Length: 298
Ligand code: 6CS
Ligand code: FE
Image (tube, protein in one colour):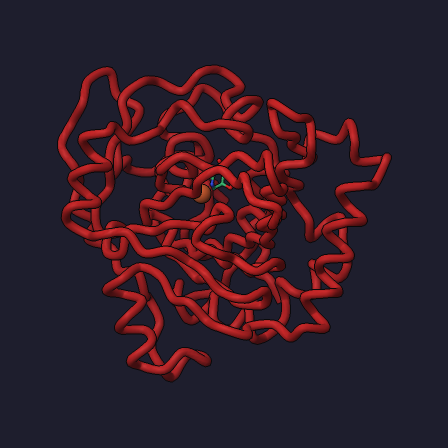
């Protein structure tokens, strides 16, 4: 049985010199309205915009349940020196915890909940597995944001993800306001792949998860995309959800307000888009950031 560890690189990035945008030809939605809970009109909007917002995706009780898990993990002494725990560079407070499905049975069950799994399968049009999960804490007063980026650019360059056939789910566990670091997305930007300049440093993930430097689009690219697509913001009450395409340009500001912005983030990749060798990095990232067990999620 041959296991392919390489694939044609349709999205060259982290280059020595700037290169043109690449028009993405793959769909954002691979399934159809008969394949799951999303209706035809919702799928059409997701294909066009690259994202879908759903209010009240989880109940108030579940928000409380997942929030208590979030607090438990952040305070778990056993996790303090675990590589899955990422702290804020300036304050040392918890910024993210990765691979939460392995740390919390409650969050593992959420990933397998039909209202999550059936939508993920419908969008990527196949069986799926979890590429990555994380809880973002975005603490009050000192939470630092995430500069503009495409997740797929990183997952292609550093994790060996061949195509943009993965969908992310972000569930708000706190109220997301415009002013407390709410995620901003450029609608339609998922159709454009923005090659980055500058090669990936060795062991890049040891600093990129605190503040990304490699793979960051240029000011000119961000300006061009913003002019073309505009900027929408994911705001909404705790319990609301954002499904978004792996290649959509997104980012979030710092949070200087008294209101933390915490979310659970789960990435579902198609089992037909399994990771191969990184396309623009010397070595693969650890499994807790880029899962390499492609067993379909049940
Ligand atoms: O490097 C990554 O995989 C992570 N970085 C960001 C900024 N978003 C996606 C992902 O969690
Ligand atoms: Fe991201």
